[in-house]
Image (tube, rainbow, N blue to C red; front, side):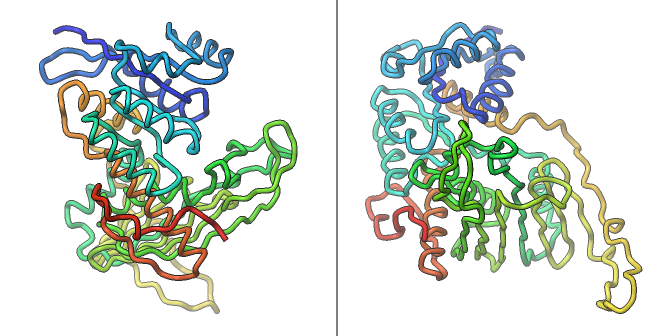
Amino acid sequence: MGEQRIGVIMNGVTGRMGTHQHLVRSIVAIRQGGGVLLPNGDRLVPDPILVGRNEHKLAALARANSIERWSTDVDSCLKSADDQIYFDAQTTTRRAESVRAAIAAGKHIYCEKPIAADVETSLDLARRARKAGVKNGVVQDKLWLPGLLKLKRLVDSGFFGRILSVRGEFGYWVFEGDWQPAQRPSWNYRQEEGGGIILDMFCHWQYVLEHIFGRVQAVSCLGATHIPERFDEQGTPYKATADDAAYGTFELEGGIIAQINSSWAVRVYRDELFSLQVDGTLGSAVAGLRGCRAQQRVNTPRAIWNPDVPNPLNFWDDWQEVPDNQVFDNAFKVQWELFLRHVACDAPFPYDLLAGAKGVQLAELALRSWRERCWLDVPVLTLGEDNHDTTASIATT
């Protein structure tokens, strides 16, 4: 058994998500575990170089994680033959330009979502990657959440019978930044900087719905900016120009109706920050980030609506926990390992830039639906040249 090195340019990992999920819990964890096991028995060990604009943050992050290399010069990093992969976790508005440069330099591409702020740019990136012959992928981490893996197990087993509906609740209260620090960066609430919960979260809902239940065929969405003024990292007030909540309804293939509420202005009264309820003719289930509970048809209690007397039932007691039956690793780490194998030995990896463009397409159509107050069909997206009339550019009311 041998060891193979693979160089990874990691741009934008000084941010919260980049630091914790992609660097510490993925790349550093893979290195500490001895690398990714390849089919031939070798171990593939990522050798990251941290790239960003703030040398003090980069130096401190590298030192804290025993990483030798960091740089503020992304162009020189792209010219180096020692690094085969370019990873991008910058803010959305900076991503497309950097990914184009990395493709031109012949690097394999792995990046956070959304891959761009509009569909045409997203498709352009995917086409460039295909033309250059570089391998490419987009982060779709929620597919490896324990709760959703258990839910997918139920779907694949036929547990639900005919699936009728899906109901999702996502979100939490993000402090405004005046009397308590906000948990999210201020750019998230500025449309001009690529912010907004629709662009952020509908990219996730697209692949979650398609992977577990079926393709999204139509969308209706109402967005809102519930908190019009927030305070930035320096405590300065600013106008929130992006949506902080979205109420979406989706028609899926097979006649399934899905509804997902997404909000950064909601207080949590549920088991987890995200829950997804699925109802079918033979059973129902409620999945969160880690847990999943199910109720079969024969175990469904006979509920009767009578507001004049106290409810005699404890509905929580009639649901059964779906067992783990496996060891679940960090979702980001799992996908990193899949992509590294894809680059090293051409292992399958369907989560490419076209898949990322589909998420941007759904977000774009949702924003248009909000603006025009209407239902919109979701056309099948391809890398052909005929997709220009299927979407509208990102805008809010």
